[in-house]
Each structure stands twice: as structure tokens, then as C-alpha cells.
Amino acid sequence: MPQPLLQAAALPFRDGRVCMVTSRRKTRWVIPKGRIDRGHTPIQAAATEAWEEAGLIGDLRPESVGTYHYEKLGRTHLVSVFVLDVTVEHPTWPEYRERTREWVPVAEALKRIDEPGLQAILRFATSIGGVIGPSVLSPNFAPSRG
Image 1 (spheres, rainbow, N blue to C red):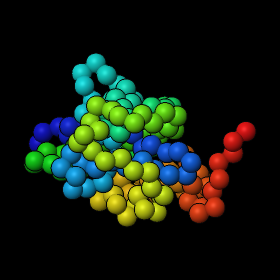
Image 2 (tube, rainbow, N blue to C red; image 1 turned 180 degrees about the horizontal axis):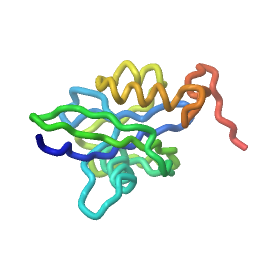
Image 3 (cartoon, rainbow, N blue to C red; image 1 turned 135 degrees about the vertical axis):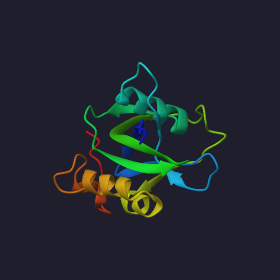
């Protein structure tokens, strides 16, 4: 059995919302993810994918919030997910002609995600005791500006 292909993903958060992008064929909503190039760390790969696929820059949390797997073309892909606290959103980015970017509430992101493992990671990240915390689930969430 072949080894799984390792990938990294950024889970972008800002003001209580998740940034999602369409797949290249625009058939699904996903978070930025891709392969880990030789010589790069998973966190470097997550930062690269956030920029290339969504035009986002920010602070990646140093620890993965979880991993999930999926099958594609007969191969298992194992994805490490890193929370990205977004600080910059560019109007254009390398794949802006191929993808649509949208900020959505966590509840909407959970509806759009079709990988059960990624849904579980998002639920954990936004739960009490999770890395993001429960405030992002509140419809009245207002980030402090001071």
C-alpha cells in the first residue's frame, strides 16, 4: 500500500468568520490546501496555499489543529490543518481568476465542507476549549478593536 500524500491547509479566520474558496472547477467550497514541497515545512506550505489560492496573509498558529484524509485518483491524501489569523486580504492573488473567495460564518462553512474530517476539525477549533474558542459561533460576536 502506498504512503499517503502529505498536504497542508490553512483554516483562515477573521472577525468570527472562515474564508473559503472554490475549487478550481468551481464545483465545491474548500479551504486553501496543497502539497508540501520538498524542503518546506507543513506550516510553510499552508502559508503558501493561503496566498496562492485566497490572497491571504496572516499569523499561522504553530501547531496543527488536526489532520484529515481524503481519497483522490486512487490515492490517500493526509492533510494537516493550521489556523490562520488573517491580517491582510489582497484584492488579487495568483489564482484569483480561477477561484472565488468568500468569508462565511462558521455554521455556513460547516454546511459547505464535504470532508467529514475537516468538519470535525472546524467544530473542534470553534468549540469550548478549542483553539479558536466559542465566541466565533455566537451571532453577536464582535471582535474588540482596542
